[in-house]
Each structure stands twice: as structure tokens, then as C-alpha cells.
Amino acid sequence: MDLFTPSWQRAWTGIGAVGEGAALFAQLMVAYAEPQRHYHTQQHLGECLSAFDGARALAEHPDEVELALWFHDAIYDIKGHDNEQRSADWARDALLAAGVPGESAQHVHDLVMATRHTAVPVGRDEQLLVDIDLSILGAERARFDEYEQQIRQEYAYVPGFLFRRKRREILKGFLDRPAIYSTPQFHDVLEARARDNLRRVTG
Image (tube, rainbow, N blue to C red; front, side, top):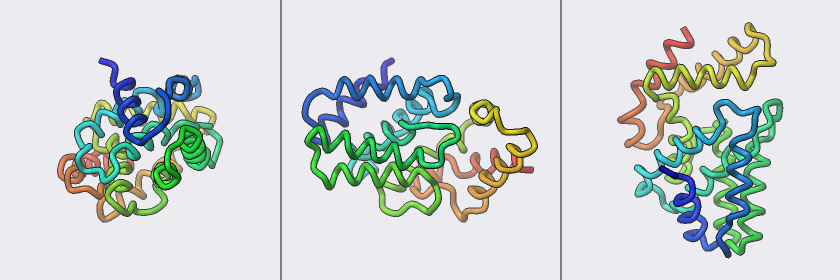
């Protein structure tokens, strides 16, 4: 089933953008299919949109959250350190160009920036978006293990010992949080399994 087209059309129309946004939709689909991606792909986008479908009622501004999901990994340069910033800027600029009110466009920008995962998310929309992005940590064991392999493929240029050390630091950072998930719905379903997955791979 095509998740992508109805999601895009619903969010694009809902936020008040002018036109169908077909060209931008096509650009984003191409971006998520770039060859350097192994995890940050259409698979990940689809999993995020599917999770949002089941949690849409939790959002204060559902169209803005949905569009932030579309853009949150739109730019993915493996060696880049400003992917979220560039993705957020692209989202804001594209939405402003489509006639979206500045406040809504800026909110999408801010939501995308929250996926840097450098701070605990605040506000319902930010918490929901970040929980969706991190839902992979609480995936079933087989999918989580596939995710870890996909991340390793994306960073194939990094020597194994260095990758393992840095990866452990990142995952341990999530494990050390009082709670990985901020919303009760995601916490109740995914928290325990996420901690099991993280403990298993961080030793």
C-alpha cells in the first residue's frame, strides 16, 4: 500500500500550502532513495509515517508534525554535521514559498531540529515527533538488529573499532536517560523493549 502519497497530500493541504506540491514530493522521494543511505531511507520514512498514523490524535498541530517527519532526514550527508539544520531550512523555505504562514513554517523547522536528539524534547508535538523517530530503538529484535546493520553500512568508511566505540557512546546516551520516550503511549509500548535492545548491544 502506498503510504507516501496520501500522507503527503493530507499534510500539504492541511498546512495551507498552495498547489499539490508534486515536485517537492518527488524531490523528497528521490532524496530518501539516495545510494549512500541504508537506514535513513524510504523504509525509515514509511515506518515513521505509519507510527504517526496511529498517534495523530496526540499532536497539537498534526500537519506540521507530519511534514516535519517528511523533512527530518531530507538531507543526509554521511560525513555532514549539519544535516538537520539543512533539512529544517529546506522545509521552512519550501513551505514559505508555497504560501504557508510563517509561524507554521517555523514550527516545522523547529520540529526537524529536535531530531538532533541533543536535548529532551519539550511540547507535545516535539515529544511525539522525537518518540516516532526513536521508535526503532524499541522495535522487535530482528528489526532492531537490521537497523544496527544498516547504520554500520552507512558508516562503512569508519574503522570497526572506532565505529563500535562511538556507536556505544550514542546508544548508551539514550540508555542513561530517565526515559527514552516522552509520551505515555510510546513509553508504555516501547520503553522496556528499547532498553532491552540497547543493553544487549552496549554490553
